[in-house]
Amino acid sequence: MSFKNLIVGFLLFASFGCASSCTSQTDGQTSSIDSAIPEADIPSVIDWTECSGNIGDHGCDFTFQDQNGDDWRLYDHLGSVIILDFSAGWCGYCRVSAGEVQQTQNDYGNQDVIWVTILVEDASGNPADLAYAQEWASTYGITSAPVLVGDRSIIDITAAAGYPVTSWPTFVILDRDLIIQHGLNGWSKDIILQWLDEVLKEE
Image (cartoon, rainbow, N blue to C red):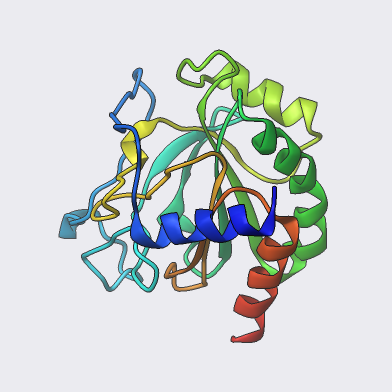
């Protein structure tokens, strides 16, 4: 991927443009995302009630099943630096980036960084399921980072109530307060690690 394409991808993320519609497909999986969080559902340490997919805002909460069959909730990880990796099984660069997940988790895990892969579609373009998440984790040797069975309920191209995934993969980096610091449409290991180091240095 050329530098020009990366810049274009970043500008697309910043402007939240999308050429295709993004619809919700839950297939009975556990999922939740909302721009207004009901107060009864907010843990005492969460002191905000609004979220979005915009840089500078708190990322929106969600719960998806991981490759071990357990529920993984974003807001349970307040205090960690999070890399959200929105991927699809048919996407070549998603597979390339998947090969970097475990090494990055090994290198940064002691700083409480979590690389979270959110599989939205399988290799045939169908909604991902638990078996596919397990296959993905096994194929790419992902043993200590969550691989989630996602769906399109997490996507909002306006960024008002979700994440503006306009190409695959899309990456979002959240700081320890779960504020979105960076977003990238497309894959660049150098950019992701540079941004990750910046977030960690700013603490």
